[in-house]
Image 1 (cartoon, rainbow, N blue to C red):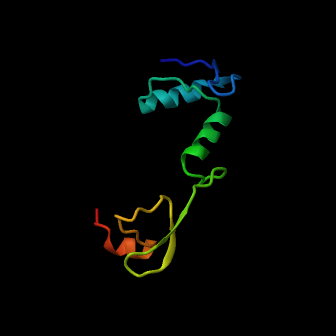
Image 2: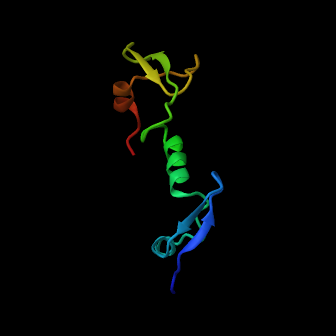
Length: 99
């Protein structure tokens, strides 16, 4: 099946971008059936926001907590509730179920 470059309009910034024949071939090899809706810049920005800031930009809000096992002060990415124990990363690693 021969692919040719296509012009696609970005759903976020409304600019046209090229969906190259090489990219189309890659999408087909992965079984993807939909064309990209976002240009490469908007895709990267969305990915940065989605992955919790690990690749820059967005910073996840952290909450102070006291470890229920060792009493050490720590921070967790969720608001602790009084009815659930919270553990520091060391204690959590030692008690979490092995997969």
